[in-house]
Length: 298
Image (cartoon, rainbow, N blue to C red):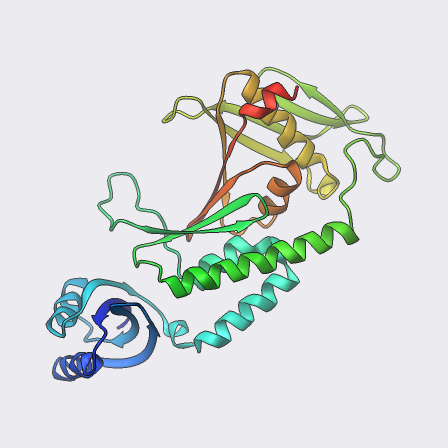
């Protein structure tokens, strides 16, 4: 069985030798090693092949016998053995090709984990936050992020910001009132808890808001645009109008939940001018954004 293991080791000669010795005695093979330097201690990431009946407790005891602390372990595949510089180059190429996929790519790059379910006593999770324009992208995992990884994440986010900025100048998004091809200009209707967009009497998009059961002052926003009418500014206008509606109803924040690979979210939030926060896990993408200012701008 393959495990990805992280531990903090004392920054002194012989630390890794003791760990290798303990692994040898336990018939555990070290297949990969990545070192993240620190001031007084070093974070080591290892890929270990262990006996089939081993679990997290056995790995933790093994590493602690060698002097390691803050041990975290998770089952992994042979993909964990891919050369790390190669992974970052591939991630950068993917971001250049599709900058909107940044949340998904960076979650995979840093091995983000799914959040524990309700009532699940999963390990507490560390958070890394990266800024793309006014949007904060968060990824979470049980293993603490190192200063080196924070620096790498910030560099990746800067790359996305530059690429999206150039794209906006080269191909500006259609204005909300612009005619869309041969069709009529969309009309936007604000109703009871929803905003809809219609073209020639046919609804092509809807943004619904409803109270978030677990949080006072928060509205959940569900936004849908007909696939044939996407990438025309309709979703952005719906998001803006729905945010205004939520603010007028007394909400302080909106929350949107979608699948992790939804590449429309990042450019949508940026285009709407929201100072949002995108939280990324292995399976879900959540956007939170304050809306107090929208009521005053009405």
